[in-house]
Length: 112
Image (tube, rainbow, N blue to C red; front, side, top):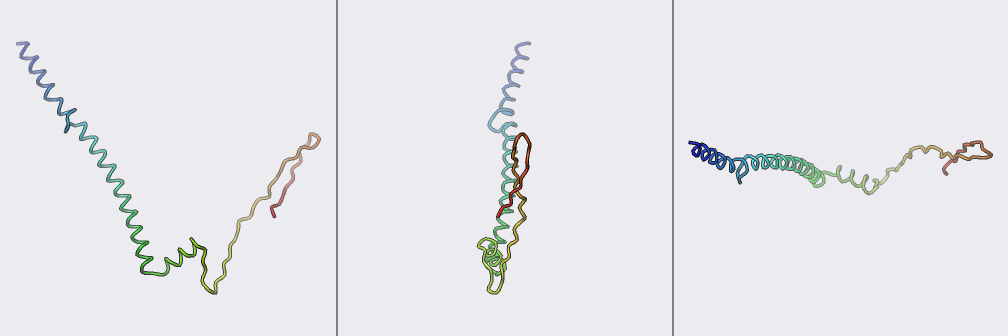
């Protein structure tokens, strides 16, 4: 009787092995599902990028506003009769620390 029980137990283990660790087992299915989710996320991001590029292409082909905007920002071009004004941010004066006879003196330098 024990031989029958042990043989059935070994048969049960032999049947379970392909289910868990075989080619189409649960672990492989789980890993493939994770890869599928990752690939779908990448595809969604690339689809969004493609739509943006399609919109840019359409604007450049059909309208002049996009072309003007790119010429202004990327190449610094201006229209005839326009004036270019550039406002630079104020720089803080540089300070230096001088030690003379053991006393600290702070002097400021202005950039010209």
